Image 1 (cartoon, rainbow, N blue to C red):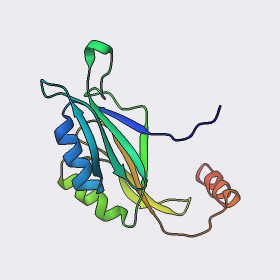
Image 2: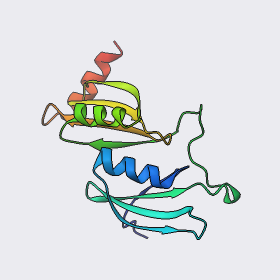
Image 3: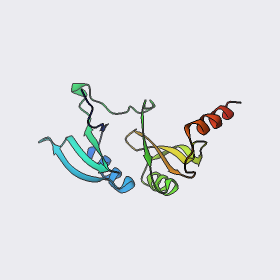
Length: 146
């Protein structure tokens, strides 16, 4: 059996606000959404960087919940962008929390991390050094640990 695609599927408390945030900050474009008669977002798909980001609101009655306040998430999404500094600044201005400040990394990228207002962590980076081989990354990684 072959895997044809992989999608990130985010669960959030306020779907309308989450979609607006992802559009404003990341430049996502909404493809479509399915909404219950009561207004709860059942499913939305956003085009983001050549892939699809899926979003739904929480359905606690089905065990579907988003990140819980005060508890770190166990995963993150890495966005490789043209200008990480600008994107992180825009995200923070729109309500994201800076988790790790941007800095130049041993693997040839300038990167940092934010947590969006819905509890999801995003690693954001841009290339600062072309062609860093896995061997060179390992050498630099080893040097970090002495």
